Amino acid sequence: MSNNYQVQNLPDYFKQYKKSIKNPKKFWDKIADENFVWYQRWSKVLEYDMESANIKWFKNAKLNITKNCLDRHLSTRGDKTAIIFEPNNPEEEARYISYQELYDEVGKMANVLQSQGVKKGDRVVIYLPMIPELAITMLACARLGAIHSVVFAGFSSSAVSSRINDCDAKVVVTSDGSYRGAKTLDLKSIVDEALDKSPQVEKVLVVKRTNQAVKMKEGRDFWLDELLEKAPKDFVSVIMDAEDPLFILYTSGSTGKPKGMVHTTAGYMVYIGYTFKNVFNYQENDVYWCTADIGWITGHSYILYGPLLNGATTVIFEGVPTYPQPDRFWEVIEKHKVTQFYTAPTAIRSLAKESVEWVDKHDLSSLKVIGSVGEPINEEAWHWYNDQIGKKKCPIVDTWWQTETGGILISPLPFVTPTKPTYATLPLPGIQPVLMNEKRIEITENQQNGNLCIRFPWPGIARTIWGDHQRYIDTYFKAFPGKYFTGDGALRDEVGYYRITGRVDDVIIVSGHNLGTAPIEDSINEHPAVAESAIVGYPHDVKGNALYGYVMLKEVGEDRDKENLRKEINHLISEQIGPIAKLDKIQFVSSLPKTRSGKIMRRILRKIAEGDFSNFGDTSTLLNPEIVDEIKNQRIN
Ligand code: PRX
Image 1 (tube, rainbow, N blue to C red):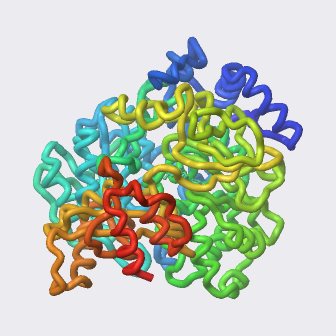
Image 2 (image 1 turned 180 degrees about the horizontal axis):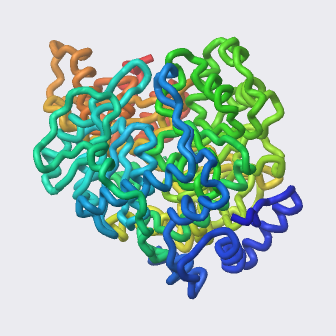
């Protein structure tokens, strides 16, 4: 990596930005050319059509992302630590995996996968805790050209099987169990249950982590360590086309079916390599730590690929912020002398509630840049983070992006862009944000709110939804023709800084997790006593948003045990989606407010959940206006 792509200062940013907008192809051509290794150069930098959502970057280029993440570092950084593994239990020793060791492990794993019948283009579902094997398996898939789909190891068996079935995976990699704080989870039995509904899976490779007893199905399930022992280290990376899929990652949508966002090889690599370097101001001997789970896009792009593309040292942390005590994050920063720390507002808010003595016990002087991602960071949390963690000397990078965007689109660049609390500030080079009003007209003035769209494709944008390109077009390219619609609202201030105000669709972000209302409602409605339901979000001081459910029962009987019903409903959600989607409040209602065309008026339900009874707007157009008072009077505090 020649490090040609570092933005130096604010005038340099404006210069780069201008260049990137004036001639995006030239801009990305140079970055791709100077900073990555290719088997074959591209014949065309970009080909695209926004209407049909057909986007191709670096057409006909040939490459393998793992050559860029591993092979090319070996001569200069072979002994350098690529991954620091910090286990859940601080008593267990940390592991330091060098670039050479990582290369060897990835080679062995690629050989194992191949010997189990995995070929280029096959899908491999990975359901693993935050352990090095997760990173190794992803890289091994990429090395042999298989498409990885990591499913967050907090999802339930139903969620696992629906994802396996959607992408038709034949191989699953999991572990016996996982450690999370004081708890141990039985990952293998969740997979076993999932596979009852996914009989097409031929092989399950199991990592030993907790050494708990698990059932192994003869001929289908194999212990990974036994297979790895016999596997050779070298595996020549498969030649991939620029637009061959690298991975599928599922995200919530407005119907019950999750969307398998497809990211392809070359554009993703170039965009993630470039943004990692710039947004975190990464320098050669830095130790970078992102606390996200690799099961989310943040982990894919900025725990794994971004750092390794830049030859960085990246921390993989298995545990939780409060185990064994609420200073675990600060202890780990001190222990590994972390220089860049990247976390979520929900974690910041919950740790800010603890005594500041937990922070003060630790030497955080190694920190240079601190980051935030996943949801809007409120002013109070921003200041706490700035004062207590960054000690007012570390710029906060409030990074706005999405699973669909592959990498960060709007963010300050540290030591370059002056920060402003709660603002993601300016677009990165190559990114053209626009605000659109309800009439689909572009808002050109500043100090206005609007629907946030992006005008021009960037290399990291997802190319499609697995198996459903029409849904991709309908979701992202229809609302504002010619533009990518993010689903977020934003405010642009007087100098052009962006502040993301939150979702404008039916996705609710709870503790940084993207949850669609539709899949949760579908789960609730499966309860035999439930006729209909509606979920809305309401502000919560730690989680950002919490979930409020309005549930209409088939038969309203005073004798029903409501507390028990609430438990059953949450149990159902937990089983079908995962505990992250459980409702905080459930109110039983005799009906839901609806328009004459039968649409649930969520706006009113949202206001009631928030406790704001000031202005419901015109309720006379409702089919059943009388219900509003009933719901209001029985609101759960
Ligand atoms: O609403 C925005 C919010 O998270 C959404 C994307 O969620 P997901 O695909 O799960 O990816 C999360 C990690 C990139 C966005 O549409 N969001 C993300 N980052 C921010 C944010 N909202 C405000 N400020 C942010 N920095």
